[in-house]
Every structure is written in C-alpha cells, then in structure tokens.
Image 1 (cartoon, rainbow, N blue to C red):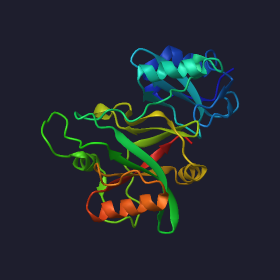
Image 2 (image 1 turned 135 degrees about the vertical axis):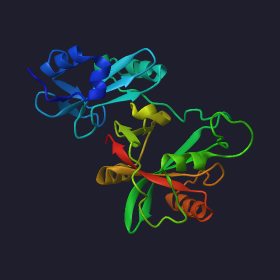
Image 3 (image 1 turned 180 degrees about the vertical axis):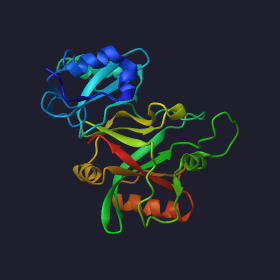
Length: 267
C-alpha cells in the first residue's frame, strides 16, 4: 500500500530514485514506526511521515518521523555516533529506524577548545523564550591562522549573528541554521553545509542533553530557539537561570555577546 511519505530531494539524492520510489510505494517503508523525534508511535499509511537519513563516514541509516515533528532531511553524524545508536536501540527497532546519539562539544579550532552549551529560559518583553548559551572553553582563532587572540565572535558575526548591547528584543532569524531536538532531547546546532549543501553540525552533544519541560514547551510554541554566544570567560557556568541572565546582561553591556534566533528542527 502506498505510504504518506515525504522524501526530500536531498534524501532522494542520497538513496537514489529507485529506493525512493520503493519507499513511496510501501515496499520498504514500515507501516508503523516510533517517531525519531518525539518517540511516539506513527503510521505512514495514515499520517504524513518524513524520511530522515542519518549519514556517517561509512554507514547511512534511514529513520522516520511525524511530518509535524521533523521535515525530511539528511543529517551528518560521525560513524561512531551512528554505530552506537544502532547498537543501543537494535533490540527495539530495526536499523532502518535508528536514531543517532549525537555527541558532546566537538573540538573546535586549533587550541582544542570545546563549546560549552547551557539551556535556559530568557524573559524578553514579558515572554519566556528558549535559549542556548554557547561559550568556548578556550580562545577560538580563525581557521588557518596561528598566534594568540580570540576570533569567536567575529567568526559568528560573519555568519550573520548580531552583536548585542542589551537583551531587549528577539534577535533576527538566522536562516539555514537550526536546533535539532530528537526524542525530546537536545542533539545539535546545525549550520548550512559547504556551498549551500546539506546541513552539518556546528555543535553536537556528546550525549543528548536533557531540557526542562518548560524549555521544550517554549521551543514548541515559538518554533525557534535563541542562541547567545560569548567568548571564553564571559558567562561561566551558572547554576540558576536568574544568574545566567545576569551574566548575559553583563556580557552584552561589555560588547561580548552575539545572538540569533534559530529555527527548531524536531520537538
């Protein structure tokens, strides 16, 4: 029986027309599945369903999601992440529906800094917004250069992030970037691929990060997440959201904060 499947052009390009057509005809697609995003049951015979292709260095795994949770897309992950996901869930669902366990801060440029990411709710104009605060553990220098200095904010500004002096409004949407939630957990911040190609991970969680019910509800309401970034030493690890907000306000006042609104991928 034909399935109510969405196979995006980028997924079709990876799996080929023949395989895509077989999926749409119902030959290789499951009827029922567990959504790779919200982990609740889905039925591709009765409700719109997205095909999501996770690609590692040597392995590709096709997953299925409610169309309202995730669009059909290709997500690049490491081979280790992909194999770990298949091993961890292989007893429950087939490899065709595996979900990658995406990794903790990838190593950044050459001083082996990692990107620390904190989630929290930020109050703007009387409304709570989901936010991610990113701060490296060491200065970030421009790729291909040597020496001292910190180019973390200039590099993000070149990507379209906006410098802030105060947190009084929602920053502009950064098109092409997104925040990936799967199984109700934070997995990655995605950026456009080279030459406008498939999205790639700008940051990946070593293990999927738990977010609060309030944060997830706000993300679903706004369908976007505010990302704030500051150089090393500007924010620190704050145990409470009020202290995190104070640190953000101080970083902005000192000219050490950039931000953007990133569309939400997943729920």
